[in-house]
Image (cartoon, rainbow over all chains, first blue to last red; front, side):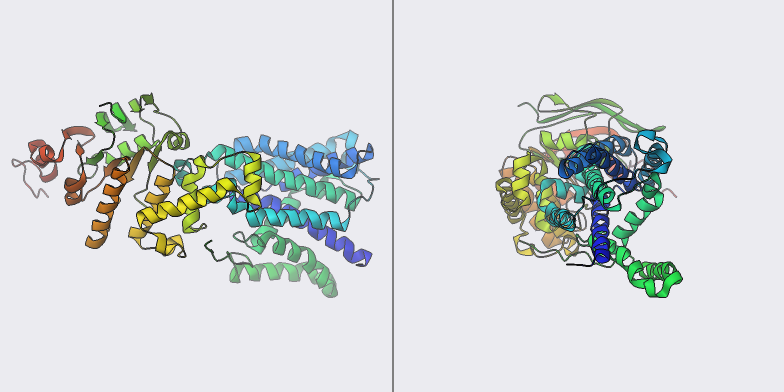
Length: 272
Length: 260
């Protein structure tokens, strides 16, 4: 249907959208993570190892996601005691630990990376995963857990006074985000076909942060729009050749000045 | 009658400053119990200790025979104690009804299936919480403002919304910190009626308030704090004529009234 080039671009865009959602969820509970690349790496490596051992793709994907979610719970536990910028530092440290681990872990290729991964990711699987993620963000405020996240994000003291367990809600949102990042990692590995630790470094985590900020943190479509633009714009700017990253950077700076809350506004509250 | 809340020898120290010194008082069930005192008397400190946002340095706080000093605010809320905030703290990202549903949080059925059903818009528990939130808004007189955003409400309506949110958690003890602050005379009449209505449903209220007329007209009992200690405790008629209370509010006659 699409040419193979655009199909590939669309798949990577869909994966990036998942990564944006993986950050958007903990951010909705006030936890800003700069370590999403680490969760992605865990999902990517475990999923790739499993499919090489002839485990079917979807169970392998789920296993990678679950491993990332468990890592999320482990990292999230100390993160609950601290707030704001210190959570960012802690998650940044986590991302680096994961990167260095895989760079030195010989069973998965170490610094030379892991090749020979089968091309199992299909466009429709990624589209379906993104559809589910969008539904999740769209409906989350209609579940008590989702409303609790929003309340904590705005005012954790008031939320706690209303009977919301801060620890449980924050940890759950962090793990849920890590789960989605792990699944995105699994898709990524079976699309890129070669992974090494440096693909999941700090710049990966930072660009995921950029997707969410660019799209708008208060709108459920925000992470999708942000990820789509950041993925597509450099492709579309190929005509300026060597200058495309410069043009892209300028576009971001203009954004920061004119639309600091992101491209999409907060949805107008409707009463039902 | 056994008190619904018993504060026993509670002290609270902030560094070198003793904000509360061995404070003891009891709140009878069904009462509107007022906590008054001059500025800096320790009212808000005691209020925060009772609602669990501050821990006492010493002493016990017993709610229905259960000492809960040192517990987390969310567990205290689940026990049946709800509060408002003097500086209104609403969730701007949620609608008015959803703000009240936050109050229902601990009373909404948990469990995977219920959450999944709610997620797809078919939740029984979720729908029940929504209709309960509407009932609460109706109770406080906000049902005609459902379309408004929380931060677009007047201050008086925001306070009412906070009371609705607190009531949604089905408290047996409601803690209200200056619910009438900044209200005009008409709004004052409405809040007085609302407090009476809450009482008629059997909910006990602890009221911190500066507005003496309001207190004297609705309080069943009053505790007076001054400089961190209880100086009087009793029905409004006794408090009104207590020489120590008058002295605390107006100053002693042997001190110069306007000491520079």
